[in-house]
Image (cartoon, rainbow, N blue to C red):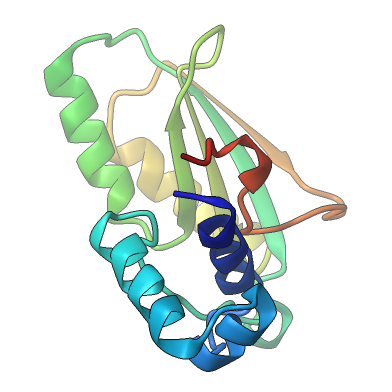
Length: 155
């Protein structure tokens, strides 16, 4: 991967609808070599997939809830069961195993507190959880799906 590849990735992160020729113009390449580089980035799993970002407000999904979970079950079978259950909840858009005092952290997107309560009840019935703590985001100050490419090491 070189600087041109990183420039291509920046273009795609900004707008996945750009054609190869539009990206080529921005990175100062001709279309065919640019298209080949994009295909190679896809084949190498640098580009995993291209998706559309939706307007949450138009879809009645204005509430972010960060759910911190602690468990007293630290074994592979419990984790597999819990992770399988959580993955099935469409409201969970991010899910992490953590270090420190919190064992798992998830970001949940719902329309309102009533719907979160319904989600919460389904969550706690899905696994043996020691402690659940939920924090509602009051304001989204920064949100991006773009990764910081300055850390990628060009060849």
